[in-house]
Length: 514
Image 1 (cartoon, helix red, strand yellow):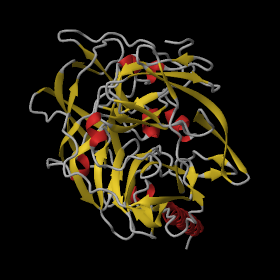
Image 2 (tube, rainbow, N blue to C red):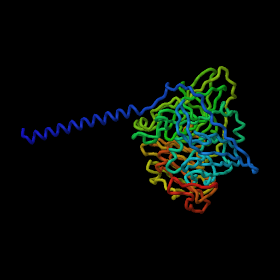
Image 3 (cartoon, rainbow, N blue to C red):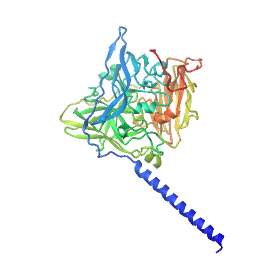
Image 4 (tube, helix red, strand yellow):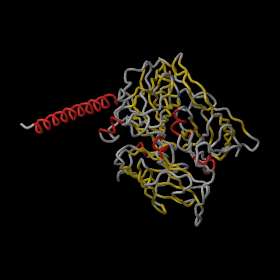
């Protein structure tokens, strides 16, 4: 063999060795990522902490009958674990906020003070109210400023919630703890034989996933987590490893997925069925028996579970077969499972009346009188190919009309879709009738890759051509990246104007009461 041939052979051997080592390294890295990406706390939670129940917010009533609440956003420290103080945000406290309650027909005002060192906002998720009171991107509150939105409650009883909506940093503010429930009541629901003793047989269950890094709330995500932050533990109402003692046969759980990216499939390890009685916007027509209810970020469900004297039963989130392909199930959280909350039944239980056979009367449109349809293609880069622009109104709808919106996800990863101001009806899922869990009033829906939904929405106003509402993915990392659009409600024949109150930087906001 010539000297040239010998050298070439040596080069090929070296190159082959390098390629082999690189392949082994990549394979080892992938194996490490794959095996380390599945999370499970099943059987690991001690359930040693009594569940915190958010206090009911105090209120006053003005001379004109307006119910007035006061909220202050503030930074603080929270001791989730003994001896370890974690920097957090909260409303009227160091973490989360009080539960607001109001009745249909009441006038309400919420006086909000921003005690943070940065601008933020407060959005009333699921509430039907004027666009200027919505608390979206255009109602930013500067540090030290106040904002006093006011409106008349004009929708059925429901489990709603409030949280920040500052442009580009919503995920950070919600993850730090700015969230709370807003419960609506009405005369019809108050008369129904449903569990309704707040904190006793009617329990708020605000579920978040968290990860701690030397006492800090970690918000990092690994390179494979396309949905956003995924924690390795859950907590309820700000309580790690929580238990709740109950003394009634029937317990109503008001489930809120307040996580920023994680989707849950709630159920019980013994396979017992429960009754779904309400979704995002209120009661179903009748209770629906099921063993699992899936909630993506922002979604709510009210379930009623029957307890047996002396038992302990765990609310668990199970792996999800409909989450997407094997890659998404593993790296985006679909394979994960969590023991969330332990219910401990007393030795003797108070008798609960049977659930009513009929619950609510639908107020969402069925789509038969729709005046037009719209199409929304969900991609992480933007909706309908456009990233969010605060100065652009993407859609204009006419007050008093019904529309059908077709929402499609073919992006290769999970998304969901939230519309401000309205509760809508799911007409179809991939061309078929929706399952029972999607037959109640909704404002947020989960769309795994390959899903198309048709939604019927009615826009009752009031009209405001210059102040838009939002529609967006409620996986907050996606929202912050720009997966969001805006729509304005106008009178017939009117055109949308130019959005008011928008700014190019995240530090702008209201400097006085409005």
